[in-house]
Image 1 (cartoon, helix red, strand yellow):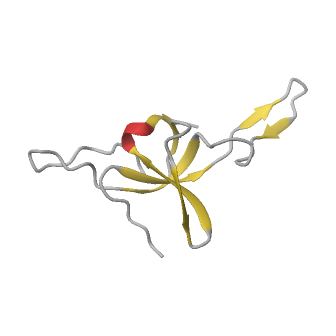
Image 2 (image 1 turned 180 degrees about the horizontal axis):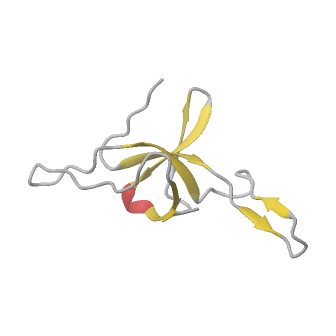
Image 3 (image 1 turned 90 degrees about the vertical axis):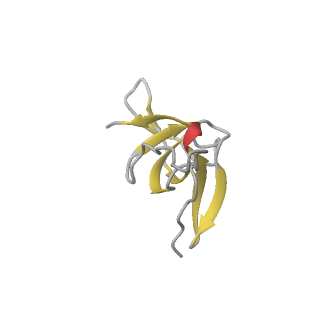
Length: 97
């Protein structure tokens, strides 16, 4: 199934953040431990409809990793895959590698 977000919604796949211990051991964050705050953009809506008939810009691209508000996403399941739906206003930053 192909899912196309509407308005300023963004479909993301949660990604874990890794922490490194003092000894240099990488400790992966699990999604079960707490709500995700970052994800890879899978699909982007066309933007929120404005009163003048235009659309607001959704300035994230498919493939980018974004940091979003912890309790913002709605969980959705697409083809057995757990994904998150967020609004552009809940995106706080694009994470550059």
